[in-house]
Image (tube, rainbow, N blue to C red; front, top):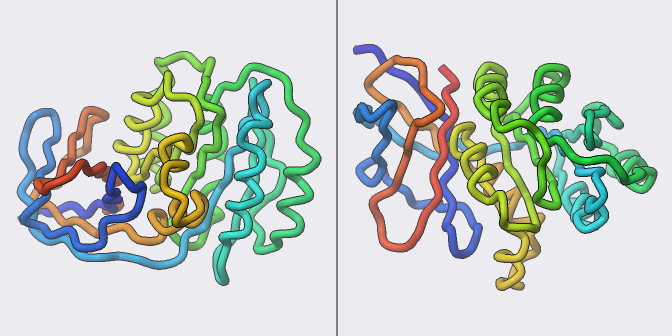
Length: 249
């Protein structure tokens, strides 16, 4: 029987923490309304190499402090690259383990033009994410507003799947929440609303974000067919959950 493997993130929507006891029997996944049979689900934790996309639009300073905290979360043997974006994307630091180098680059950022996150994602994924050695995680740190054309969404999903990169939007404003959640859901990532996370002070946001990025599941389904950008994955359990999937084989 033909099979396909997917990298799955499972997050408790209330706490923004990874769900670490998910069972295969709880998962349902459909592709263009066709249900895919779940064969196996197992943890697939490990290090994550991160490309951090930093919003350098007018509201970018709102999220700049979190960039430093995300850098501090790096652990050996993980690496991080830094991309600044507004109306275009600029690779500021290629993948490195040097926290000092990354922080110096963040401190030099100048803010101003309208941000185009979707355009920046396409450019960053195409030009740099293949340098990552471990799980490819893109942390999209945004104030929440985006001026990209909505038609770019399928292009971002296609690039992310082709390069096996999961997108983790981290945002302040809630007006574009649906876009950020859809990006995450279709690429095996997770979306983090910083205002929601502020209600739980027991763990800093950066720690929770990395905890999710480092603790995906490997899901095997009994079908081998290209996923559409309308793929749906859900968990049958009490409490609100957020699941996403990225095809890797």
